[in-house]
Length: 321
Image (cartoon, rainbow, N blue to C red; front, side, top):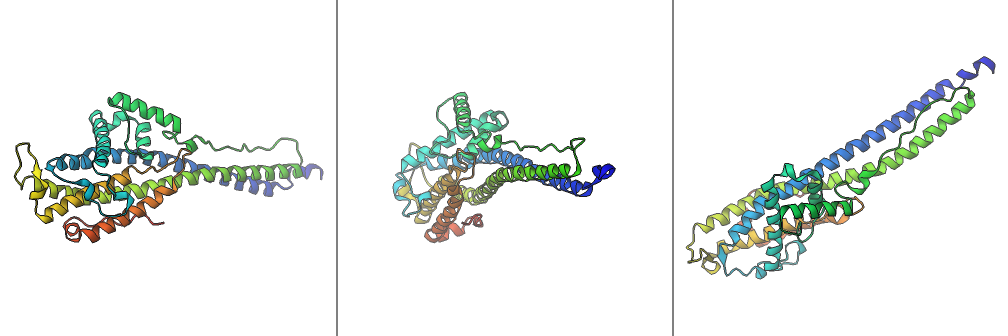
């Protein structure tokens, strides 16, 4: 072959490397885009949870304390786990998350840091944080984030491998072709690995979008029911301690207060739901929890048809199995 050796297979080799470069670029671009979106959406959902606890649910807790002789243990006569009350204990757990969120809002979410907000978004639990002082709370969160690798999710530590292309001078056409095919095989293998991690992020994004959408839509209704029970506090007479006797409420208003409590439990059930496990993957339970939430709200519509009709358009179902 002589002087023609360098140009033999040239076109085929060029096409192979063009394909390899395209596969590699597309895979890495998908990875980077999904990683950035997942990180951003975790932080955003963390902020959203803090705002709902610190503002909406905080308002409910304040209003609810204006009533006395309310047997919260009897307010939930259903089997749905999201809104099955545990009485005053459940309210105390809700208030812990409220208090913590109010602390964060006082110091400002900008000062809180993305790691803490990411942890708030990713994890649920009976209370958002342990401790009293804000500094201690943040330190506890930081430790939890490090221990579970959620502030930067475990899979976020993955870095795509780059296959360096290059023709070694002096090797013959067939050898160059073989090297090109070998490089292409390496690229495909690395792209397959990278795409697995990309899909992990994309699943996290899907779950976060579903939760954020539900929380936003439910807030519309929840705010309306809060307005109604707030009006009740100015309608009925109070005792010397500033309390309204539940027994003095009209039946319609008793039901409204019942509904507000059950909606609070439903909201709390969703907000405390863990979304990501310690391996940095979206939890299957988090997906089914939204279906349960929609089913729970359907139960409330059946039990409180008149009261539900007086508040805003119902949240659309945002998740299905």
